[in-house]
Image 1: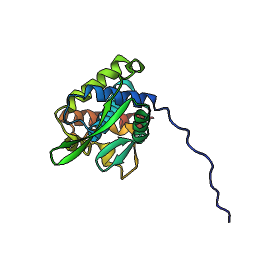
Image 2 (image 1 turned 180 degrees about the vertical axis):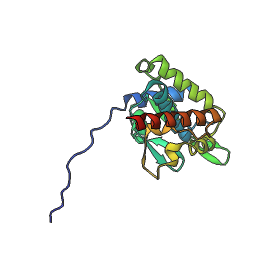
Image 3 (image 1 turned 90 degrees about the horizontal axis):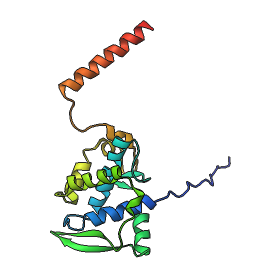
Length: 191
């Protein structure tokens, strides 16, 4: 029996917004001694997820995958390679305690006109929220996210999983859910 092999290849995604957001984040994080590649991944993830919650869509077109250190954009390495090849950024390796920190440093300003004020506000909030954390800290935090917990190595993380909270429900939320469930069941029984 012949084996069917598809010649279909997924079209290359436009990573312009991802590249410019990487530069924006790197610029804003220049004074953060804890900023490295792991932290960059998490800032991108939390910014895209935060935009998904607030705006109904992520900021970039990036897809996120489950990696050992937490969620990371699938297209990140391609975006970084292009930024390096264009001379828009360089990577630096710096000693950071007992490790080597890989850090992307911008050589030009980002094209922030590609983003709305709301999008940039979300990114700035994420940067501020994670400012005092190092790569290990943000990695540990991302391991509490349901999107990461529900997937295995290299699996895609759906943005909709960000609606799931790692925090337990309050008594008020539980009571609201029970009331909604009872209301839905009463409506179904009467139909």
